[in-house]
Image (cartoon, rainbow, N blue to C red):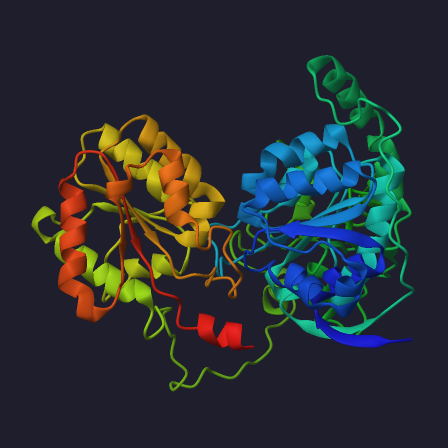
Amino acid sequence: MKKLLILGNEAIGQGALDAGLSGAYGYPGTPSTEIIEYIQRSPDAKERGVHRTWSANEKTAMEAALGMSYAGKRTIVTMKHVGLNVAADAYVNSALTGANGGVIVAVADDPSMHSSQNEQDSRFYAKFALMPAYEPSNQQEAYDMPKLAYEISEKYHLPVMLRLTTRLAHSRAGVEISEVLEENKMHLPSVKDQFMLLPAFARRKYKHLLEIQTDLERESEVSQFNQYIEGSDKSKGVIACGLAYNYLMENFDKCEYPILKICQYPLPRKQIQRILSECNEILILEEGMPIVEEMLNGFLGNPKIHGRLDGTLVRDGELNPKKVRKALGLPELSSKEIPEVVAGRPPALCLGCPHTDAYKALNEALKEYGKGHVFSDIGCYTLGYLPPHNAIDTCVDMGASITMAVGAADAGFYPSIAAIGDSTFGHSGITGLLDAVTQKSNVVIIIMDNDITAMTGMQDSQVNGRIEQICEGVGVEKEHIRIINPLSKYHEENVNVYKEEISYNGVSVVIPRRPCIHVYAKKKR
């Protein structure tokens, strides 16, 4: 049997391809990005003509995936946890429309916030939407799950979530490859109104969604990914979800406690009841938020259940074997101290980054107004908050730079500046610009165009080569769409452009345009 040494993300991509994938949609976001990148590089995907381009944002990706499902084909849509917030409208409603061809929503969570604005557990969305979910404990399961997920998706006509976390997404292991399935033939839904959510239809579909929950629970009871492991010591039982099962196993040659390994949701009720009845107390290990623990604890609490809620495990950050060991009451293993030469290294803009000169000119243009005037959001340019630049003041979510600048201007705040990247502008900045133009806001919007989606690994931006045309089309006056070259030799010229647009009472767009220094290497490759 063929074996590959691949990342967890790549295992999902390969598993989806081997399960008859016809289309992959998504927006790049660490730690999910490599799923589609792997499919984009795949010779098999290229030969088969599998659709595999990036979408403008996660909502458009989710909707495009539903469109391919409508046509009967199997599809996967990928995003990070905060991206699911963007896709939530389409995602939650898709539980009512259901699927025709199988749909997998692959979401990578980022506990400990290695490259994210928050810690968030996507299992909440699956529970909220009443949608089945898978959570692999290792790379082999990440490969195997897409086939089973597509079967469940098409059996119950429901999209399925596949949730993973940073450590699994970005670590490698050997994966055995199984047979490759043919792609579905195109076929439209057998029920004409399946994707029509007029209230009369939606009410009926919601009743049906509630009715099949017992069937989905039964699937979890017999799932190959959920496992009840006998133990002789009933003083404690352990419920380990997804990757947490691996952390548990790292602490034992043989665990004497009964273990319930959970990697498919909804929760297997009978197996939960069994471990609760057999064991004196229960330790719940789950990567992310205490979802299972809350469900078993209830509002009144249960003195035999332990986890993040009662302090047995810390509430924030990633799980790891050491934290699990402490929660089990095992003696701490001796560990070597970190050498003094190993120092923390804060993130910084790359040497030669165009954002550096864009921020230098902006800082000088704003000297007379003092600090606190630049709203921004998530991307490489967020590093402009740190020394030596100290150039931006906010970062809430993608696109919030423009809309927060508009709100501040509405309050009479002046000058009100937004700094946004080219890819983020395409993702969720255009609608904010439309608000600004419609309301005739007194704002300056700086679209930092480095010709690439740099932060997530050099993906092409959806707005490459079209930013000024988009701005003009939305309604920004042509004479107030200014393009500057962020190089030190143009510093004075760039400062003057910023000052001129700050003094204009209306919507201005300044586009500092110079390619990321890594773009040339990418294009050469």
